[in-house]
Length: 103
Image (cartoon, rainbow, N blue to C red; front, side):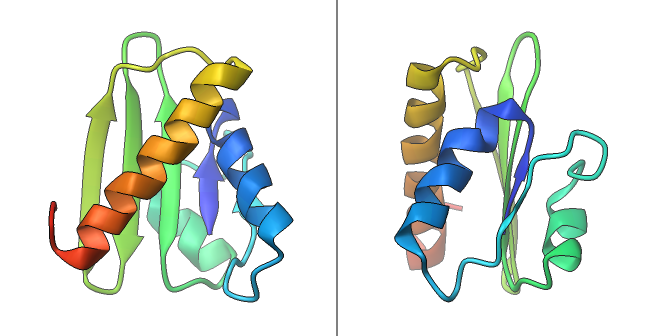
């Protein structure tokens, strides 16, 4: 499951295009997607990835049955290039987390 603000839109779009049976969907509502746990429960998923952007930083939150992790990145724009960069970076952080390379 993916949640967040406009910063997460490209990631959600890319995952939806894959038509994976394990991708539960996205919740990009600013009010409802305030934490990865809320997104995970709302979409009945095992894991949730939340990208939330602010004026000075963007946070990538990942929640799985094994635990939670948060990463801070300096990408603050919501333009198409920044969203693509965030999508790739978020998925790389999740890959590293799941393989035990980085927590």
